[in-house]
Every structure is written in structure tokens, then in C-alpha cells.
Image (cartoon, rainbow, N blue to C red; front, side):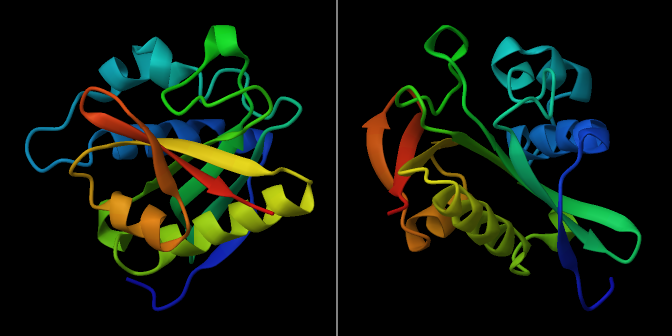
Length: 163
């Protein structure tokens, strides 16, 4: 594993890799993973990818050497296409995934911070996400200023004020 990694802005060409990161995020639990095609066919997951790089989409990719190792991005979805973390019109929903080998090395935190800084610079007031209970990423989100605003069946919606 290379010692260092960098962040770059995501481009339209990163759509396939973002799909891989949705699958990683969906398969955070130990045990048999949910098949890639099942995750990507799920309409709730697909909405975070469909038509990637439309106006308002912002993302970053972590790179080690020539390998993409993680990504974080946000989309502002309309109520009729709301995702798991929808809290209101104009509030972008965060999606993040990191390859298992690179978890707990600061990659997710760096991606999250860069995305929040960018959203703040764009004038966004808040950012939301959804996380399943028991997911180790909850600790990351809490330490980065996200707070639970709504609890659902097995998952929580978290929001960070960016101002």
C-alpha cells in the first residue's frame, strides 16, 4: 500500500468508480456482500449516480499512485427523488465510500472535510447524509460535526451546519 494519497475533483468520467463506492458503502457490514448488481439496481442507490455530473453535483476522489481508493460526493435531489438522507429542498445529500484496505487511514475524513469546505464555499448552509445504525462511519460523522436529526428503521439521518 502506498504511504500517501491525494484528493482530486471528481469528473463525469468517474461515474463508474462512484458506483463502486456506492457498493462499498452499502456493504459496510462483515459477512457476505450484497451483489454489485443488486445494489446498483436499487432505485434508492441509483439516484446517487444516475446522470452523474449534472448541475450541482460535486465530488472528490482519493487517489494512491494510479489507484482510485475512495470518493465522496453530494447531490441536491428533489423531494420526488429524495434519497435516504433527504432533509429538505436545497440541502445536498452526501455519499461516501472508501475501499476496505484504505479505511481507518484518514481517507474518508479528508474526503468529508474537502466536500464540506466546498459546500460552505458555494454558500450551502447544511449537508445531510444517512447512515445505518452500527456502521463504524457514524463515529467519523459525529466527530466532523454531523448530528442525528431523524431516526428511521435501522438508519439515522444526520445533518451538519456548514455556516
